[in-house]
Every structure is written in structure tokens, then in C-alpha cells.
Image 1: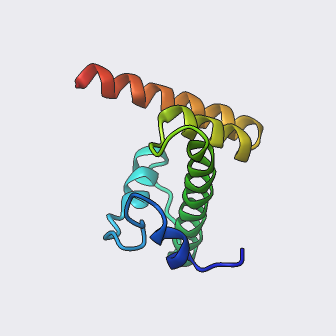
Image 2 (image 1 turned 60 degrees about the horizontal axis):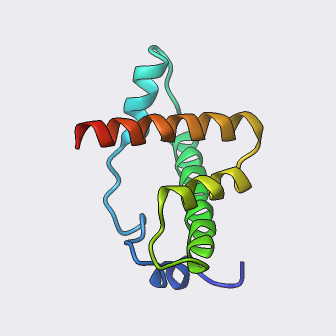
Amino acid sequence: MGFSRQEYWSGLPFPSPWNLPDPGIEPRVLRQMHTGLSLSHDSMNILDSFVKDMFERIAKEARRLACYKCCTITHEDIEIAVRLLLPGELRKYAITAATKSLIRYHTCR
């Protein structure tokens, strides 16, 4: 990439995840999914970096897709970005989880 994260995030209509406090979600998810396992601090930093990088890539692609239609990023833009960026099984799992979350969101609303 030819630009910094700060330059990239300054053009987006939502705040950068680097400016938000770190809630420490990963250890809680790990404890729920795999009791008895733990990750070292370095491993957690690598995992956190991976998640933030994928968020950046998906947001950038969704933004590019939304520029052709309107200035709002919709769930369809996010889904198309995920389809373009993630490989095979990870793509299927991400889309399934996102669909479940959308259904849950709309039923609770």
C-alpha cells in the first residue's frame, strides 16, 4: 500500500478501530470455544493484527463497491467484499455467521 492507515481511515465515514479502546474480546471468545486452552501475549497480538487487517481490507473493498451506487455501505456491499477477499471455507463460514447475526438483529429490533 502506498498510504498510511491514518490517511486511509481519514477518508472513511466511520471511526478507525485503532482509536477505539481494546475490549479484550479474544480471550473471552477463546475461553468460550476452547476451555482449558490459552494463547501467549505474542500470539494474541498476531491474532489481533490479523483481525484488524481483514477488517481494513473488507471495509476498503466495501467502500469501493459502495462508491459506484451511493455513499452508504450496506450489508450487501460487505457480503460481496467478503466473497471477493476470503477463501473457500472461511468465506462460507463468515457469510453464514453474518446472515445469522443480521437475522438476530432484525428480530430483536
